[in-house]
Image (cartoon, rainbow, N blue to C red):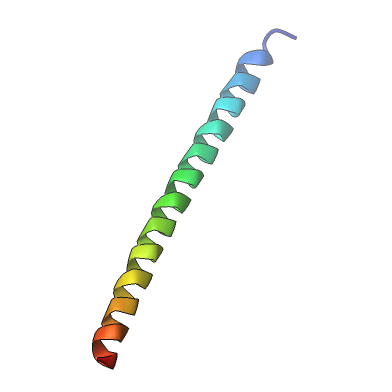
Length: 49
């Protein structure tokens, strides 16, 4: 069925884009969380000393 393949391609592309977006956001969130944890630890240390 030839009329089916473009739709399949579109769905595949959308899924791929979604996956890429999700990984990007997750990585960004992870980085931010690390920074937050780092700053939090720094403040704790400052308060301790």
